[in-house]
Every structure is written in C-alpha cells, then in structure tokens.
Amino acid sequence: MSFRSWLGAVILASIPFVGIVALIVYAFGRTRSTSQRNWAKALLVWSVIVSLVCVFLTYIGILHPSQWGAIL
Image 1 (tube, rainbow, N blue to C red):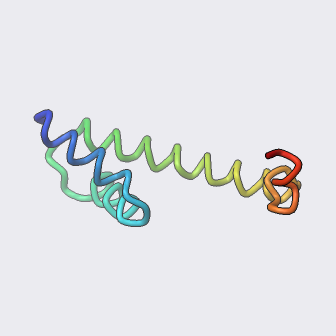
Image 2: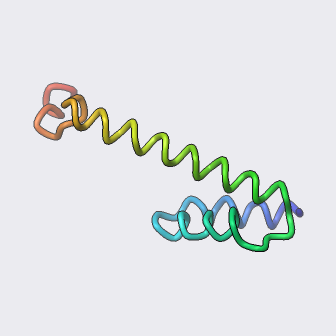
C-alpha cells in the first residue's frame, strides 16, 4: 500500500460515523491489503474497548456531566 492510500485511510477513519463504516468495510470487505485489513480490525477492537470504558466510567459517575464543574 502506498503512503497516499494509508493517509487517505487514516483520514477517512478519523471522521465520526463515516470512519466506523469505513473501518468495517476495510476490515471485512475485499480489501487487497492484508495489513490494511488487520489495521482496521485492530482499530475497531480498540474503539469498542474505549467506548466500553467510557460507558462504564459514566455509569459509575466519574464522567457524569453534573460533576464536570468539580473537575474543571
């Protein structure tokens, strides 16, 4: 894969909502590059882990909006 292709994939993956769709297509579609498929799968797993941690922290009250005043 060329530098341009990687740059385009990274920029596309960083766009909210569109990036998730692009990562799913890269990870499970018929992408020619094995490294791009593996990168997309790893980024999807990482996104799920971070999302779950954020949901958990919000659930226990650490990230609850009513407490932001105390943090800021």
